[in-house]
Amino acid sequence: MILALLVVVPLVELAVFVKVSEAIGILDTVGILILVSLVGVWVVKRQGLAIVARIRAELGAGRAPAATMVDGLLVLAAGLLLLFPGFVTDAAGLALLVPPVRSGTRRLLARRFERRVHVRSVVVARERHANPAASAPSHRPPTRPGPPPALPPG
Image 1: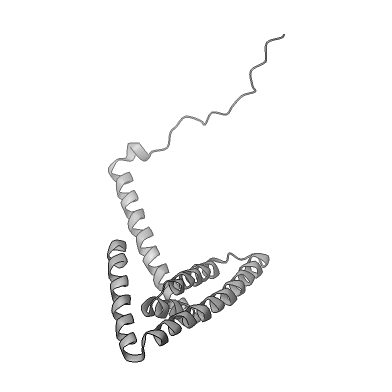
Image 2: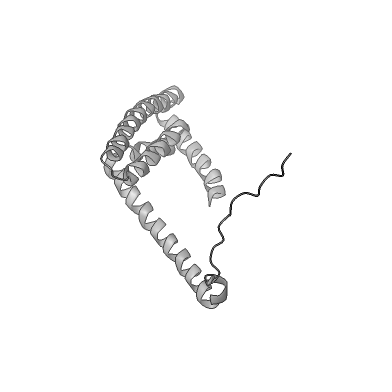
């Protein structure tokens, strides 16, 4: 899957770049890409700092900032997408900077993660059920280290 993305995305980016260059000219195309990247980096920095402040506030209030940390990772992904030159990656990066899009992406990732965790826990449960001796707790009491051995006089 990742290998396919590494091949397909640059080809799509190149095709879009050529089409846009034919329509508006090469200098305008390059200018737009540079402008979008600069504006994107500025927005990523602002949103990143806001997310750090939200994480600190949630930690200060005694809450786990799980959703905010995922937002931070998505903003980081947006920043990385904006660093790659191209209209398709810029569009994806800019989309991740829109809070409702980021929220939907976060929910989608959470559902996918929950399914993977559920599938793996079912597999582990089946393995334990198939071989109960391997997963049965030991009936020996845990050993505790005693005092260190005395050093010989000398």
